[in-house]
Image (tube, rainbow, N blue to C red; front, side, top):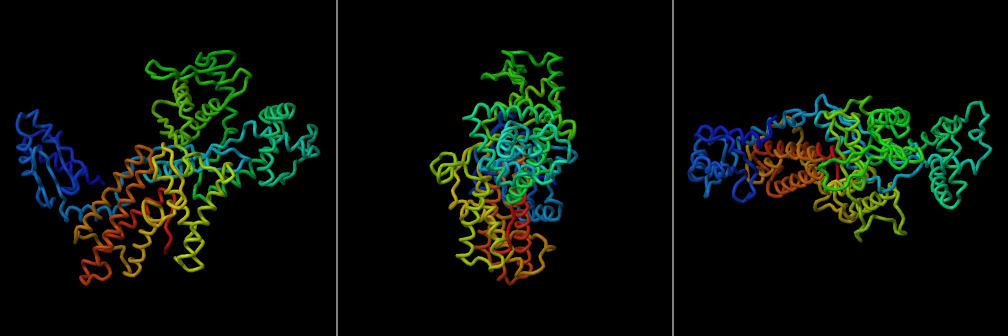
Length: 583
């Protein structure tokens, strides 16, 4: 289904052509003066130079060729603007097609295409902290947006599961429980099915080991040795690693489930590791990797660079691989397993140079063909009210589950105090409002920008917030419930200016999502639903809906707000939250 602006532009093209002018001048835009008109065309101003006549002459000639049935107003004004207001019948026809079309008529441009969205990126054996919030929320919403457009979208968590932290845990565990069979190189029996630690113990072991490494050189060396032996396949260490993975992944899934975030692929650095030796040898053999101060690097600088882009380090001088090595091997794995048309990375913006180096190296090595797009979306920092990175009250890094709990507790207090719902619905309603507050508070900001985390503002029921969007949806649900069966009611021509404003707002659904997809910017969806919710509430306050005596007119009102509700619910589903029944 065509976007409404494209339809209006097509009609304008025909009018330009019928008037004897080049239709290339016929672009129509949303008016930047909504007090004067809804849409405008400024093409006559540019056409005047080519046709050597006054712009107003061209505008008037074109206006006469437009079909009057499509417009309430067609006005040619000095010096040559064409101002348009759509007719109610045009809007009614468009919205009725939108209402009855699958997914509101949005063209599925991703059908037959695959995208891998790399977001999450937690290290196993460590609790999620607030630094993982933006990656999870932004990545999940973009993955859902791609799915809505028909893509086969694969969310890959890309676990940090193969580095020194594993050796540190093994070394610390051996220090505490040296009698465990995992440390006996001569043990040939079956290792215990039960892990020798709980998730809480595991989360304490790592920071203890990390601190010990800085003070105890022998322990640090032991951890490095354990890491090496794990990666070389030592049987006992692999069994311990599997315990760590099983317990950590179960805990990660629980925490991501609480955020309504899910991954299709739970692969990590360990899955790419077996591909590294052959990849490195191949790059050396082809002369793409060169030796530099004992290390092996891939030069990626280009003549057009305006700032220095250092070589991509493949192997350090001590023979070890680094993040770039693993990321290149991961690209080999993804191309082999998924054959993606695009790979999108969602990480902290401070990793921008890293991904620029990796992408260039991958192209240069032929790991990723030009037909597969590579994109890094670098997001900004979540800051406290002091403008500095958000911390706990004692200055530490807050665990993600603690942040979610604080938001949930804050919302629950408001729900209970205001007696918003019955007691048996408090928890479900609280959870949905809290998730909307948290996610919308993040996603309404441009991803690349830093933002201030403000509990009071994010959880407010008024203003540009998630709870306000939910409140609008719940208000519509209440009206629809009182009316009764409404799903098959047809859209009618607008009965008042507020209905027309709402209808025009609904037509902006596809352009808003298309813009968000093109720019990897969920904030554009937030901006859209905030505008749409505002139009819904204005229409509600200015129109007697359930009190309307004319049944046909009332049915039109109900069909209109029903469509608005469906559009709002589709948008918040893409953003990763949902609305309660009452609020």
